Amino acid sequence: MAFSKFSLLFSLLLSSFLFTTHPVLCDDEEDNLYQGINEYRRSLNLTTLTKNDNAECLADELADQFKNQPCTNTTGANTVPGTEPQLPNYLNLLAKCHLNVSNTRDGAVMPACVPGLDSSLVLTNFTKSLYSDNLNDTKYTGIGIGSDKNWIVVVLTTSTPEGSFLEASANGADMISKIGLMYCSMILLVLGNMFLL
Image 1 (spheres, rainbow, N blue to C red):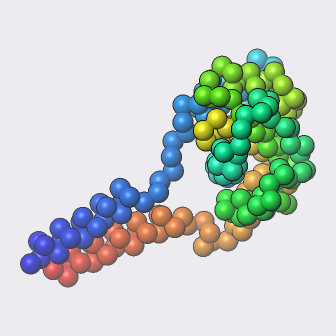
Image 2 (image 1 turned 120 degrees about the vertical axis):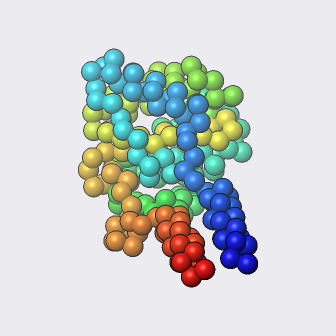
């Protein structure tokens, strides 16, 4: 009987690990673009951009919004810092990533549509277009990249509070991830049941 309880709890723990959402590693297209942008910046003697998880979250959400739009312009429409992309649910997308307008206004959102997300065309799309002005700007220190279908979105962040893309609420409860809390609870449950057996 004790063995069956343990195996049931173990299988629950294993299935929760396998079937919960985990941070997904960037797709090859996103990794290639990240490396290409940083090589481009190094060639201009600029500092490299560091990955920003919150900016990546927003880039993923935006790419998901754009994915069904046709590729009518491969350079995308440059989003001027301080303005939100023209999406009716932009504030909801920010909220999904625990962001708000006040900590994203100095950032830059740069969507592009490239059929098949060919890596050389994607990089050229950012370095040889209006977007290069943002990539050449020393105020940008972080980057998030998301893609879906033919769309790829780059979000640039700054080191200022208005462009840091830090989570909107930074109290202690928000610092613990829900998934991490779930795993700790499951481990404590399993260990507690093992000692009760």
